[in-house]
Length: 92
Image (tube, helix red, strand yellow):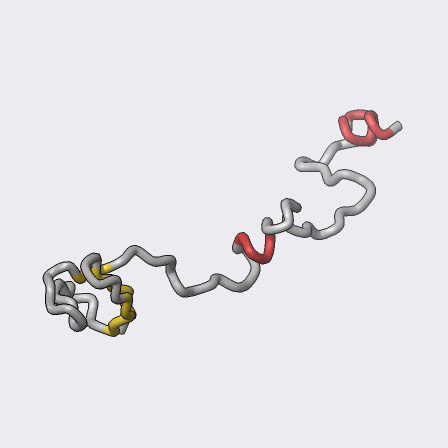
């Protein structure tokens, strides 16, 4: 069950209350008895871990590590000869 943060605008009471998502939000303050008890907006309480998430891959402004490639670029299509290969002719 989730824990919701509530606050009373009349007496200033702040309290965390565990209740079902389907439960009706509370309105009556348990401290002063006024109908000024409201649910507060809070940050989510979970953290994503593992490869592919911001905290592990992009937090420091760097790109994720990639596998090292060979010095020669790979050809998408096989060439009939070295003379007709655009990669072989640009490397020379």
